[in-house]
Structures are given as C-alpha cells and as structure tokens.
Image 1: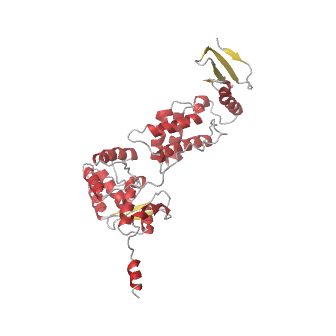
Image 2 (image 1 turned 120 degrees about the horizontal axis):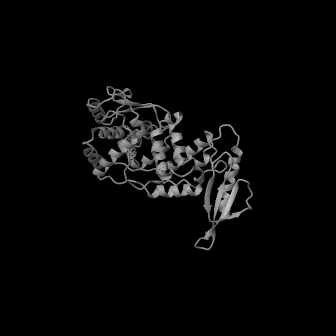
Image 3 (image 1 turned 120 degrees about the vertical axis):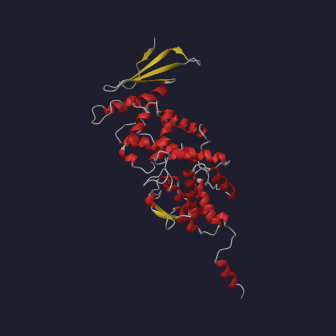
Length: 367
C-alpha cells in the first residue's frame, strides 16, 4: 500500500510514496492535485523536488481560479489537440493570410503531442519536440529555419490560449529563450540553365504546376502570393500581375515574361478553370500549399534536383536578373523587398562586371 506523505505545503496536494522500489533503490512519488470544482490530476515523479515543482504551482493556479467568472472547469483535462483546434477554429485565425501555413505546422504538433494534456506541456517537452522536428522529416531533413517556424506556431497558439482566457501552466514562465535553432546565413540556392530546363521538361505532365513554376521564376513571387493569385490580378494584355497580399503588406506589380504569359493563357483556356482563382485542382477547387508541395516533390525528384525547395525558385529569379544586368534596386522592387539588405546575397554574381557608367568613365580617362 502506498505511504501517504503529510508534509506537503499545500492543502490541495497529496504525495504518496509507492511501495515498489525503482532499480536504483529509490521509491517513486505519486502526486495528486485535488482542487474543489476541478477534476483530480495526478502524476508520478522520481523525487519530491520534481513533484513539488509540478504540483504546487498547479494547485495554486487552480485555487486562484475558483469562483472566477469565465473559468474553464475542464482545464486539467484539456489536451494540446483541443487547444490547437480552438485556435484554428477561431474566426480571426481563419482570416490570417498565413492560415494554411500555420495549419500545416500546427497539425505536426497535433500528430505528435495532441494527446498530451496542456498541464503536462512544459519546457522539457518543448526541447524534446525540437529534437524530434530535426530528425523526423517525412520527406527530407528539416532545416533550422523550418524547425523554428514550427516552434513559432506553437508559441503563437500558446499565447493565444492565454489571451483567450485559459490560465495555462506557463503563465509566469517565459518561453525558453534558447529553444530556437541558430539559422545559417541567407540561403542562396538557385537553378543553373540545365537544371531549369530539366525541371520544366519534367513538369510537362502537370500543366498547372508547370505554369506555377514558370510564373514563380519569371516574377519571384512567394509561394503564398502565387496561390492567392486571382485572374482579376492578372493583366495578360500588359504582361503583369498585381500582388495584393504581400509579406510586408505593400501591394506591388510585377512584370510577366512572354513564357509566363503563354503558360497562363493556356491555363485560362483549360477545361477546368475558375473565374476567380488561377491555380486549381482537377475538381476546380483552389490549390492549397500542401497539394502544391506534394506535386512539386514528384517533379523535383524526377528532375534529380538536390537540396532545392520551392522558395529557391524565387532565388532563381533574382540570380538570373542579377547576372543579366538588373541593379540591386530593380531586384528588390521585383521581389518586394523594402530595403536592399535582402538582395546583397546576389551581389557576388555581378562583382567585377561592367556597368553602363563604365564606358563614360573610360572616355574620361582618355584625356
């Protein structure tokens, strides 16, 4: 029979020392938190210090909630999956332009930690999740940036929960400062002419994705901007598109090359077409990120491209522009950057190349 420990400094917490010893000779401590108005919560620890660190803040937190308006009586049973679902179902969340990206990353947390109770979701679990993110990529090893974006989404959901009335167990503890991965300098992978030619050839069997690739390389638009594109934003007569919803909230117009215009004209004349969205599935519904990524991976694999992601099509656009005389200011304008800092990664492609003013400079040196 478990031995009760009566030296607990809180009336709603009880420790029971289990009779069976652990391998090291110690005895585990079963800890119960029972606050009137809430369901009982229990957990086993190896040491009393660990038991107190978990149980006392929890008991104090629940006791403070007794009798308060808007208290959620099922807090001890709330799971991570339920918290995530509530966030994703919130009307304000659904209005976010990054909703699909958030939903994909939130789904990873549901699959891996959805059954875990919110009250068990602590700092050690976060570090475990970070390591799992690094090593459990379904299709490829995740980069530090991808891991950080998954962590950021969970932090966003956690903060949303607190602001929505849930008194979550880390109310008085900051999110771990060292949890984020150190990211390398800006990625600079782009296609050379042979790789681009092969990619377009392998995409011929999927006209929708091939058009998406052509438009991405021709304009440098981000994947989210591409998928939100409407026919009303496409001006085929004047060879340009208008990006209304951008990352920096500043709409911009981008020139369309002839190949991109031709591909869009064919897409508009296809059997499955919408008067609204440009990129569709076979059933006429707008294509979402996960669906584009799935079809893109097949084409990328067929083209034997290594270490290449969809976002690198944007880098390909910038690199081609840089190597063919476009200035940093022009590249920034096409890509939608407010400063020139982001386009400095392409400067090495044109270092040492002559600019228009060099001819005039040479004339002056003739004396």
